Each structure stands twice: as C-alpha cells, then as structure tokens.
Length: 118
Image (cartoon, rainbow, N blue to C red; front, side, top):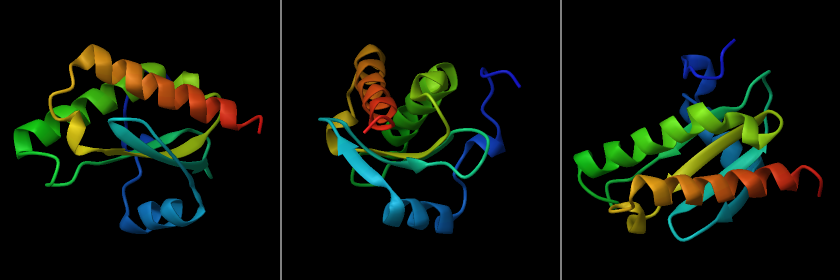
C-alpha cells in the first residue's frame, strides 16, 4: 500500500484505543505538542490527534489537525517501525506556521524512532 494515503486503518478511532494508549504509552513533548506513543499492535503505524476546545476555535483546531495529518501521511516512515501515536496540541500551537509545525512534529517523530533503541 502506498504511504501517501491516510485511511481508517491509519487512525486511532475508538475511545478505548486512546485510553489504552494513554495507559501503556510513553509521553514526550515540545513547546507545541505532546506525543503519547507505544509499539503498535497492527502492521502499520496509527495516528490519533487530540485538539481540545481550550486550544482555539473550530477553524484553528481543524487547521492544526490538517497539518498533523498531512505531516504523518508524508513522513510516517520516519517513525521506523509500527507505532500507535496520539499527538496532543497545546494552546501555543494556534498560530504555528506550517513549516514550524513540520519541524516540531518531525523532531517528535525522530525522538520516537530513537526510543526504539533504548
């Protein structure tokens, strides 16, 4: 399957999946995002995105989610393995330019891929 798609199988969808990941996963963060991740149980990495109402209005929240989804779609191979990943946006991510968002998320992806060797 092409890595340029983002299907239902590429997402964390159920509340129970998010809760399970929160219990068994590790947390890392930077100024704009918190990443909760754990080795995946399927044959591909899966992404969940959490952007609460405290972050901004609907337009701002959806913009953040689009940026995260697009980055994951294009760069999921940087994770190096199969991971379940929930990216949680912080309030400071509201006015984050797309190129800075890519840099921040890329740094998290690199840290996650390096955690395999720990």
